[in-house]
Image (cartoon, rainbow, N blue to C red; front, side, top):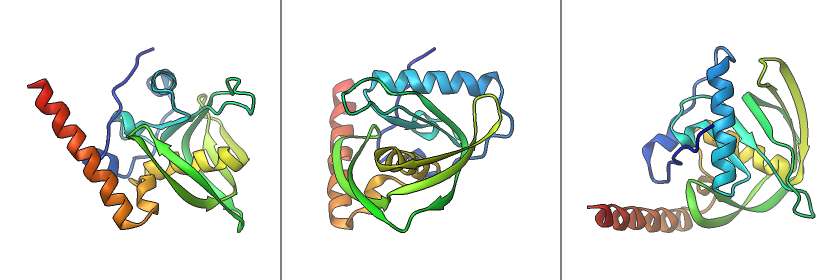
Length: 175
C-alpha cells in the first residue's frame, strides 16, 4: 500500500467529472487500499479518487463510532444515489482538499445508494446522519463539486483565496 498525494483546491483537477470504472480488477483494489491508507494518514473520514489524481468513480469512507473507536472501512465503486429523504440535515463539513476550512452544508438526511464492491458485485446501502453526509460529500467530488460549492459565493471565494495564497507561499518556499 502507498500514501498518495492529496490534491488541494483550487487545483482544476478537482473540478473534473470522474469516469465510471469499467472493470473491478487488481488495479482498482490496489487503488482502494492506497486511498484508505492515504485517508488514514491524513486523518480524514472520506476520500474520492479524484482527490488523489485518479479519474475514476471510486470513494472510501471510515467513520468512528460515538466513542471514537475506528469504524468499518467502506469502499464504493460507481456509487449512485437511488433514493434520498425529503428531510434534510445541516452538518459542518471539511475536506482533505480544502485543509483547515469548514462550513455548514445542508443535505438529505438519509440516502440509499447502489454501488459495486471491491469484488465487482452490485450492492446497496441505506445511510443516515453523518454517514449519509459523508457519502454525499465524497460523491460530489465525483461530479467535480466541492463542499464550498454549496455555500455562499462570498464565503467560498474567501476560502479559495486563502488556499491560493497558501499555495503561492508554499511554492515560494520550495524555490
